[in-house]
Length: 374
Image (tube, rainbow, N blue to C red; front, top):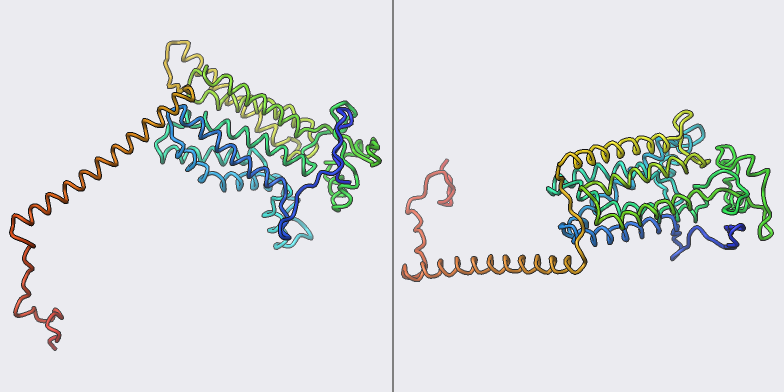
Protein backbone atom coordinates (compact mmCIF):
# COMPACT_ATOMS: atom_id res chain seq x y z
CA UNK A 1 0.00 0.00 0.00
CA UNK A 2 2.91 2.39 0.72
CA UNK A 3 4.92 1.34 -2.29
CA UNK A 4 6.07 3.40 -5.27
CA UNK A 5 7.14 1.53 -8.38
CA UNK A 6 8.89 2.20 -11.66
CA UNK A 7 8.37 -1.17 -13.37
CA UNK A 8 9.72 -0.02 -16.72
CA UNK A 9 13.01 0.89 -15.05
CA UNK A 10 13.06 -2.16 -12.77
CA UNK A 11 12.78 -0.03 -9.60
CA UNK A 12 10.56 -1.30 -6.77
CA UNK A 13 10.16 0.61 -3.50
CA UNK A 14 7.63 -1.41 -1.46
CA UNK A 15 7.53 0.90 1.56
CA UNK A 16 7.86 4.65 1.11
CA UNK A 17 6.36 6.48 4.11
CA UNK A 18 5.47 10.17 3.83
CA UNK A 19 6.88 10.99 7.27
CA UNK A 20 7.87 9.73 10.70
CA UNK A 21 7.19 10.46 14.36
CA UNK A 22 9.47 11.81 17.08
CA UNK A 23 8.04 11.71 20.62
CA UNK A 24 4.56 11.43 19.15
CA UNK A 25 5.01 14.42 16.84
CA UNK A 26 4.58 13.63 13.14
CA UNK A 27 7.29 15.01 10.87
CA UNK A 28 6.45 15.04 7.16
CA UNK A 29 9.27 14.43 4.68
CA UNK A 30 7.83 17.20 2.49
CA UNK A 31 8.49 19.92 5.08
CA UNK A 32 11.79 18.39 6.19
CA UNK A 33 13.13 18.27 2.63
CA UNK A 34 12.17 21.90 2.02
CA UNK A 35 13.98 22.92 5.24
CA UNK A 36 17.11 21.02 4.17
CA UNK A 37 16.82 22.66 0.76
CA UNK A 38 16.93 26.11 2.36
CA UNK A 39 20.12 25.20 4.24
CA UNK A 40 21.86 23.82 1.13
CA UNK A 41 20.71 26.84 -0.91
CA UNK A 42 22.22 29.19 1.68
CA UNK A 43 25.49 27.27 1.70
CA UNK A 44 25.83 27.47 -2.09
CA UNK A 45 24.91 31.16 -2.20
CA UNK A 46 27.51 31.91 0.48
CA UNK A 47 30.19 30.03 -1.45
CA UNK A 48 29.43 32.14 -4.53
CA UNK A 49 29.36 35.39 -2.54
CA UNK A 50 33.05 35.41 -1.66
CA UNK A 51 33.93 34.56 -5.26
CA UNK A 52 32.08 37.58 -6.69
CA UNK A 53 33.10 40.32 -4.26
CA UNK A 54 30.21 40.10 -1.78
CA UNK A 55 30.31 38.80 1.79
CA UNK A 56 28.74 35.73 3.33
CA UNK A 57 26.91 37.94 5.81
CA UNK A 58 24.92 39.46 2.95
CA UNK A 59 23.41 36.09 2.17
CA UNK A 60 22.87 34.98 5.76
CA UNK A 61 20.91 38.20 6.34
CA UNK A 62 18.99 37.73 3.10
CA UNK A 63 17.93 34.18 3.87
CA UNK A 64 16.72 35.26 7.30
CA UNK A 65 14.68 37.94 5.55
CA UNK A 66 13.17 35.68 2.89
CA UNK A 67 12.36 32.34 4.59
CA UNK A 68 8.96 33.31 5.99
CA UNK A 69 7.85 35.58 3.08
CA UNK A 70 8.65 32.95 0.43
CA UNK A 71 6.78 30.18 2.26
CA UNK A 72 3.83 32.54 2.78
CA UNK A 73 3.96 33.61 -0.86
CA UNK A 74 4.02 30.00 -2.08
CA UNK A 75 1.13 29.08 0.20
CA UNK A 76 -1.03 32.12 -0.57
CA UNK A 77 -0.52 31.63 -4.32
CA UNK A 78 -1.64 28.00 -4.02
CA UNK A 79 -4.69 28.86 -1.92
CA UNK A 80 -5.84 31.70 -4.19
CA UNK A 81 -5.97 29.41 -7.21
CA UNK A 82 -7.39 26.43 -5.28
CA UNK A 83 -9.96 28.08 -2.99
CA UNK A 84 -12.50 25.28 -3.29
CA UNK A 85 -10.21 23.07 -1.21
CA UNK A 86 -10.23 25.56 1.69
CA UNK A 87 -13.44 27.58 1.51
CA UNK A 88 -16.87 26.26 0.67
CA UNK A 89 -20.11 24.78 1.85
CA UNK A 90 -19.66 22.44 4.80
CA UNK A 91 -16.21 23.79 5.73
CA UNK A 92 -16.24 25.76 8.99
CA UNK A 93 -14.09 28.82 9.55
CA UNK A 94 -11.88 26.92 11.99
CA UNK A 95 -11.46 23.99 9.62
CA UNK A 96 -10.76 26.37 6.73
CA UNK A 97 -8.05 28.13 8.73
CA UNK A 98 -6.53 24.81 9.83
CA UNK A 99 -6.31 23.60 6.24
CA UNK A 100 -4.70 26.85 5.11
CA UNK A 101 -2.02 26.66 7.80
CA UNK A 102 -1.22 22.96 7.39
CA UNK A 103 1.48 22.71 4.70
CA UNK A 104 2.90 19.37 5.77
CA UNK A 105 1.00 17.51 3.05
CA UNK A 106 1.99 19.88 0.26
CA UNK A 107 0.28 22.90 -1.21
CA UNK A 108 3.18 25.26 -1.95
CA UNK A 109 3.31 26.84 -5.40
CA UNK A 110 6.85 27.66 -6.48
CA UNK A 111 5.79 30.70 -8.51
CA UNK A 112 4.28 32.28 -5.40
CA UNK A 113 7.54 31.72 -3.56
CA UNK A 114 9.58 33.19 -6.41
CA UNK A 115 7.36 36.29 -6.61
CA UNK A 116 7.75 36.85 -2.86
CA UNK A 117 11.48 36.17 -3.09
CA UNK A 118 11.92 38.75 -5.88
CA UNK A 119 10.13 41.43 -3.82
CA UNK A 120 12.24 40.62 -0.75
CA UNK A 121 15.42 40.67 -2.88
CA UNK A 122 14.59 44.12 -4.27
CA UNK A 123 13.87 45.57 -0.81
CA UNK A 124 16.95 43.89 0.70
CA UNK A 125 19.27 45.10 -2.08
CA UNK A 126 17.97 48.66 -1.73
CA UNK A 127 18.43 48.67 2.04
CA UNK A 128 21.88 47.05 1.99
CA UNK A 129 23.02 49.03 -1.09
CA UNK A 130 23.84 45.87 -3.05
CA UNK A 131 23.82 45.71 -6.84
CA UNK A 132 20.69 43.59 -7.43
CA UNK A 133 21.65 41.88 -10.75
CA UNK A 134 24.92 40.62 -9.24
CA UNK A 135 23.09 39.51 -6.09
CA UNK A 136 20.39 37.76 -8.16
CA UNK A 137 22.95 35.71 -10.10
CA UNK A 138 24.36 34.29 -6.88
CA UNK A 139 21.03 33.32 -5.33
CA UNK A 140 19.85 31.65 -8.55
CA UNK A 141 21.86 28.52 -7.72
CA UNK A 142 20.14 28.29 -4.35
CA UNK A 143 16.68 28.73 -5.88
CA UNK A 144 17.31 25.83 -8.25
CA UNK A 145 18.58 23.61 -5.44
CA UNK A 146 15.42 24.39 -3.45
CA UNK A 147 13.21 23.54 -6.43
CA UNK A 148 15.01 20.27 -7.15
CA UNK A 149 14.73 19.13 -3.54
CA UNK A 150 11.15 20.33 -3.25
CA UNK A 151 10.16 18.01 -6.10
CA UNK A 152 11.42 15.05 -4.09
CA UNK A 153 9.08 16.20 -1.33
CA UNK A 154 6.32 15.73 -3.94
CA UNK A 155 7.59 12.19 -4.50
CA UNK A 156 6.98 11.24 -0.86
CA UNK A 157 3.51 12.82 -1.02
CA UNK A 158 2.60 10.98 -4.26
CA UNK A 159 1.70 14.24 -5.99
CA UNK A 160 2.71 16.34 -9.01
CA UNK A 161 2.23 13.58 -11.52
CA UNK A 162 0.96 13.61 -15.07
CA UNK A 163 -1.53 11.70 -17.15
CA UNK A 164 -1.82 7.93 -17.58
CA UNK A 165 1.06 6.24 -19.38
CA UNK A 166 2.26 2.70 -20.00
CA UNK A 167 5.69 3.83 -21.16
CA UNK A 168 8.99 2.73 -19.60
CA UNK A 169 9.13 5.84 -17.37
CA UNK A 170 5.72 5.15 -15.77
CA UNK A 171 5.36 5.46 -12.01
CA UNK A 172 3.00 3.06 -10.25
CA UNK A 173 1.09 4.18 -7.14
CA UNK A 174 -1.24 1.73 -5.33
CA UNK A 175 -4.89 2.75 -5.41
CA UNK A 176 -5.16 1.57 -1.78
CA UNK A 177 -2.74 4.36 -0.75
CA UNK A 178 -5.41 6.96 -1.52
CA UNK A 179 -8.26 4.77 -0.26
CA UNK A 180 -6.61 4.35 3.14
CA UNK A 181 -6.35 8.13 3.51
CA UNK A 182 -9.90 8.78 2.39
CA UNK A 183 -8.70 10.97 -0.48
CA UNK A 184 -9.50 8.78 -3.50
CA UNK A 185 -12.98 10.26 -4.12
CA UNK A 186 -11.58 13.80 -3.92
CA UNK A 187 -8.69 12.95 -6.24
CA UNK A 188 -11.16 11.52 -8.78
CA UNK A 189 -13.74 14.31 -8.52
CA UNK A 190 -11.03 16.98 -8.92
CA UNK A 191 -9.61 15.23 -11.99
CA UNK A 192 -6.19 14.50 -10.47
CA UNK A 193 -6.84 10.76 -10.82
CA UNK A 194 -8.59 10.39 -14.15
CA UNK A 195 -10.96 7.72 -15.45
CA UNK A 196 -8.26 6.68 -17.90
CA UNK A 197 -5.93 5.93 -15.00
CA UNK A 198 -8.57 3.88 -13.17
CA UNK A 199 -9.55 1.99 -16.33
CA UNK A 200 -5.94 1.04 -17.05
CA UNK A 201 -4.59 0.01 -13.63
CA UNK A 202 -1.65 -2.37 -13.51
CA UNK A 203 -0.93 -5.08 -10.96
CA UNK A 204 2.53 -4.38 -9.55
CA UNK A 205 3.94 -6.37 -6.65
CA UNK A 206 0.49 -7.84 -6.10
CA UNK A 207 -1.23 -4.44 -5.85
CA UNK A 208 -3.56 -2.53 -8.15
CA UNK A 209 -1.72 0.62 -9.23
CA UNK A 210 -2.39 3.63 -11.39
CA UNK A 211 0.55 4.27 -13.73
CA UNK A 212 1.33 7.91 -14.43
CA UNK A 213 3.97 10.23 -15.88
CA UNK A 214 6.33 11.20 -13.00
CA UNK A 215 6.15 14.95 -13.69
CA UNK A 216 7.97 15.78 -10.45
CA UNK A 217 10.96 13.73 -11.63
CA UNK A 218 10.99 15.28 -15.11
CA UNK A 219 10.93 18.80 -13.68
CA UNK A 220 13.61 17.94 -11.13
CA UNK A 221 15.90 16.59 -13.87
CA UNK A 222 15.19 19.64 -16.07
CA UNK A 223 16.15 21.97 -13.21
CA UNK A 224 19.28 19.93 -12.55
CA UNK A 225 20.26 20.46 -16.18
CA UNK A 226 19.78 24.23 -15.83
CA UNK A 227 21.85 24.24 -12.62
CA UNK A 228 24.74 22.34 -14.23
CA UNK A 229 24.68 24.68 -17.23
CA UNK A 230 24.84 27.76 -14.98
CA UNK A 231 27.81 26.33 -13.06
CA UNK A 232 29.57 25.77 -16.38
CA UNK A 233 28.61 29.15 -17.86
CA UNK A 234 29.18 31.38 -14.79
CA UNK A 235 32.80 32.24 -15.74
CA UNK A 236 31.66 33.07 -19.26
CA UNK A 237 28.73 35.33 -18.42
CA UNK A 238 28.63 38.68 -20.18
CA UNK A 239 26.76 40.86 -17.69
CA UNK A 240 25.43 40.79 -14.15
CA UNK A 241 21.90 39.42 -14.11
CA UNK A 242 22.48 37.16 -17.12
CA UNK A 243 22.51 33.97 -15.06
CA UNK A 244 19.24 34.80 -13.34
CA UNK A 245 17.62 35.61 -16.71
CA UNK A 246 18.88 32.33 -18.22
CA UNK A 247 17.38 30.51 -15.25
CA UNK A 248 14.00 32.23 -15.67
CA UNK A 249 14.03 31.50 -19.41
CA UNK A 250 15.04 27.85 -19.01
CA UNK A 251 12.69 27.16 -16.13
CA UNK A 252 9.81 28.85 -17.94
CA UNK A 253 10.27 26.67 -21.03
CA UNK A 254 10.51 23.45 -19.00
CA UNK A 255 7.59 24.31 -16.74
CA UNK A 256 5.35 25.24 -19.70
CA UNK A 257 6.00 21.89 -21.40
CA UNK A 258 5.79 19.69 -18.29
CA UNK A 259 2.75 21.49 -16.88
CA UNK A 260 0.78 20.60 -20.00
CA UNK A 261 0.86 16.94 -18.92
CA UNK A 262 -0.03 17.41 -15.24
CA UNK A 263 -3.49 16.61 -13.90
CA UNK A 264 -3.27 18.61 -10.67
CA UNK A 265 -2.57 22.05 -12.14
CA UNK A 266 -3.97 25.22 -10.60
CA UNK A 267 -6.49 26.72 -13.00
CA UNK A 268 -7.85 30.14 -13.86
CA UNK A 269 -10.84 29.44 -16.04
CA UNK A 270 -9.75 27.13 -18.88
CA UNK A 271 -6.07 28.08 -18.53
CA UNK A 272 -3.38 26.48 -16.41
CA UNK A 273 -1.97 29.25 -14.19
CA UNK A 274 1.57 27.90 -14.26
CA UNK A 275 1.64 27.80 -18.05
CA UNK A 276 0.47 31.42 -18.26
CA UNK A 277 3.13 32.53 -15.75
CA UNK A 278 5.78 30.38 -17.48
CA UNK A 279 5.01 32.03 -20.81
CA UNK A 280 5.32 35.50 -19.25
CA UNK A 281 8.66 34.48 -17.72
CA UNK A 282 9.96 33.27 -21.09
CA UNK A 283 8.93 36.46 -22.90
CA UNK A 284 10.31 38.80 -20.21
CA UNK A 285 13.66 37.04 -19.73
CA UNK A 286 14.18 36.64 -23.47
CA UNK A 287 13.54 40.37 -23.99
CA UNK A 288 16.06 41.30 -21.26
CA UNK A 289 18.71 38.94 -22.64
CA UNK A 290 18.33 40.12 -26.26
CA UNK A 291 18.38 43.78 -25.19
CA UNK A 292 21.63 43.34 -23.25
CA UNK A 293 23.30 41.25 -25.96
CA UNK A 294 22.50 43.94 -28.54
CA UNK A 295 23.88 46.67 -26.27
CA UNK A 296 27.10 44.70 -25.76
CA UNK A 297 27.40 44.12 -29.50
CA UNK A 298 27.03 47.89 -30.01
CA UNK A 299 30.03 48.51 -27.74
CA UNK A 300 28.42 48.93 -24.31
CA UNK A 301 30.50 47.49 -21.45
CA UNK A 302 28.16 46.36 -18.63
CA UNK A 303 29.02 45.47 -15.05
CA UNK A 304 30.07 41.84 -14.90
CA UNK A 305 31.30 40.12 -11.72
CA UNK A 306 32.57 36.73 -12.85
CA UNK A 307 33.53 34.33 -10.03
CA UNK A 308 37.19 34.13 -9.11
CA UNK A 309 38.95 30.91 -8.10
CA UNK A 310 38.53 29.42 -4.63
CA UNK A 311 42.17 30.21 -3.80
CA UNK A 312 41.68 33.86 -4.79
CA UNK A 313 38.44 33.96 -2.80
CA UNK A 314 40.21 32.64 0.30
CA UNK A 315 42.98 35.21 -0.11
CA UNK A 316 40.40 37.98 -0.52
CA UNK A 317 38.54 36.81 2.59
CA UNK A 318 41.79 36.72 4.59
CA UNK A 319 42.70 40.22 3.37
CA UNK A 320 39.26 41.52 4.34
CA UNK A 321 39.57 40.03 7.83
CA UNK A 322 43.06 41.50 8.21
CA UNK A 323 41.75 44.93 7.19
CA UNK A 324 38.86 44.66 9.67
CA UNK A 325 41.30 43.67 12.44
CA UNK A 326 43.56 46.60 11.50
CA UNK A 327 40.65 49.06 11.63
CA UNK A 328 39.52 47.65 14.96
CA UNK A 329 43.05 48.01 16.34
CA UNK A 330 43.29 51.60 15.10
CA UNK A 331 39.94 52.48 16.66
CA UNK A 332 41.04 50.96 19.96
CA UNK A 333 44.35 52.85 19.85
CA UNK A 334 42.55 56.10 19.06
CA UNK A 335 40.27 55.60 22.03
CA UNK A 336 43.23 54.88 24.32
CA UNK A 337 45.04 58.02 23.08
CA UNK A 338 41.99 60.16 23.73
CA UNK A 339 41.72 58.77 27.24
CA UNK A 340 45.44 59.39 27.84
CA UNK A 341 45.09 63.03 26.74
CA UNK A 342 42.16 63.50 29.12
CA UNK A 343 44.12 62.01 32.04
CA UNK A 344 47.15 64.20 31.24
CA UNK A 345 44.99 67.33 31.13
CA UNK A 346 43.53 66.55 34.54
CA UNK A 347 46.98 65.97 36.07
CA UNK A 348 48.31 69.27 34.70
CA UNK A 349 45.37 71.15 36.23
CA UNK A 350 46.34 69.91 39.67
CA UNK A 351 43.95 67.10 40.26
CA UNK A 352 40.30 66.43 39.78
CA UNK A 353 38.20 69.33 38.56
CA UNK A 354 36.57 71.16 41.50
CA UNK A 355 32.96 70.39 42.15
CA UNK A 356 30.50 73.22 41.79
CA UNK A 357 29.33 74.59 45.13
CA UNK A 358 25.64 74.51 45.78
CA UNK A 359 24.05 77.97 46.13
CA UNK A 360 23.36 79.14 49.68
CA UNK A 361 19.87 80.30 48.84
CA UNK A 362 18.09 77.83 46.61
CA UNK A 363 15.63 79.17 44.09
CA UNK A 364 12.22 79.43 45.66
CA UNK A 365 9.74 76.88 44.44
CA UNK A 366 12.46 74.70 42.84
CA UNK A 367 12.15 71.99 45.45
CA UNK A 368 15.87 72.09 46.22
CA UNK A 369 15.40 73.63 49.70
CA UNK A 370 13.32 70.69 50.92
CA UNK A 371 10.28 73.00 51.44
CA UNK A 372 8.08 74.39 48.67
CA UNK A 373 6.83 77.92 49.19
CA UNK A 374 3.07 78.10 49.58
